[in-house]
Every structure is written in C-alpha cells, then in structure tokens.
Length: 187
Image 1 (cartoon, rainbow, N blue to C red):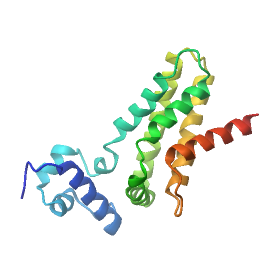
Image 2 (image 1 turned 30 degrees about the vertical axis):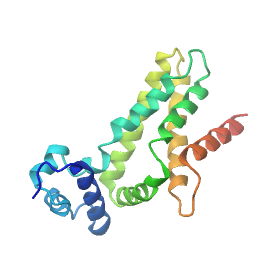
Image 3 (image 1 turned 90 degrees about the vertical axis):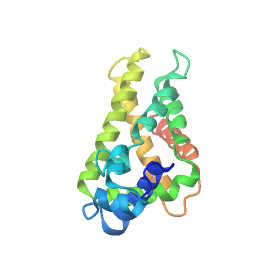
C-alpha cells in the first residue's frame, strides 16, 4: 500500500464518506476507510484522530473564514453588516462543485445521533467565535451574542436550502437573501 502518496487526506475523506453513506457510521472502521483508500490504518491516524474527524476536519478553516469576513469590515459598522460579511466570506467554502459531497455528508450526519451532536457543538462554537469577534469590535451585550446566534441560524437555514434537491442558487446568493428576509422580519 502507498504510504506517502499525495492526496492521501482527500482520498481518506472520500473513502470515509463513501463507506459511511453505504454502510453507516457505526459499521465502518478506520481500517475499512484506509483499505478503501488504498492506504494503511497507520496512515489514516496520521491525518485523523478518529473516524469522526474524516467528516469534521475542515471545520477550523470554515470558522476562520467567518472570522476573517467579520474582521475585514471597517470599524463602526452595524453588527448585522459584520455578520453579513462573515456569511459571504464563509459562503466561498461551499462552491457549487461541493454540493453533492455536502449532501452526502449531511445525510451521514443526520443518520447518527453522535454526529448530529458534534455538528451542533460545531455551530455553538462558531456562534461563540462570532460573538467574541463582535465584542472585540465593541458591540455590547446582549447585541453581540444575539447577532452571532442570528448569523449561525441564517447559515444553518441557508445550508439546508443549498442542499435541497433542485436548488441551483449559490450559497452566497441564498445567505444574502436570508439576511434580507431577517431584516424584513425585524422591521
């Protein structure tokens, strides 16, 4: 088996998703994933601490996109403008070519209570990071927390819409529309 072949991480992630989708998360081992990718189990653990990480390993980059988008907004701008910029920056993490992968990943997560819990924790951490970013911009409480939680809710609703069968709008388009709808609801 190839040990240092390029693209090993991506091959492991694809193999994991294929196996989780076909036979379920609980019925798939790290050894199964490594074998399906043509790699060793040791190689699997070089990239991932456990099999869940094959689904969640890109989350740090995702979070950083939100934070970078928020930080790029000039000081003094309203909190929802900052959240809108964060959402638009994060939308680039989901190009249209990633939609099928994301649909399959979402289906795997929905089928497993532990993975659903992990996804919820991921979103809670994102809200915490956005709240910190807003507080660093001198947005007072409870406004910073409310705006951060609203941003995560808009993302979650938008992500579900983006995954829907037949949907062809970009993630950025969907999120911008939901933010406008949020403003209309608040008016």
